[in-house]
Length: 61
Image 1 (tube, one colour):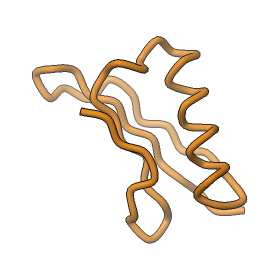
Image 2 (tube, rainbow, N blue to C red):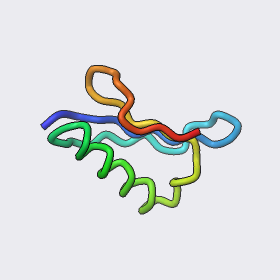
Image 3 (cartoon, rainbow, N blue to C red):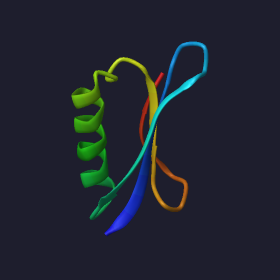
């Protein structure tokens, strides 16, 4: 398992959420990240999810 970080931003650039979670791979991390966004009501906010080596696995602007 590797640690991924999901970050959500307000339109003015303020950080609304930063959550770390573990996933088996990028595919699972994308699913987990999308679920976290939906659960917290941030699906339509600007967000990104990055892998431990800095690759973006999920992004919305």
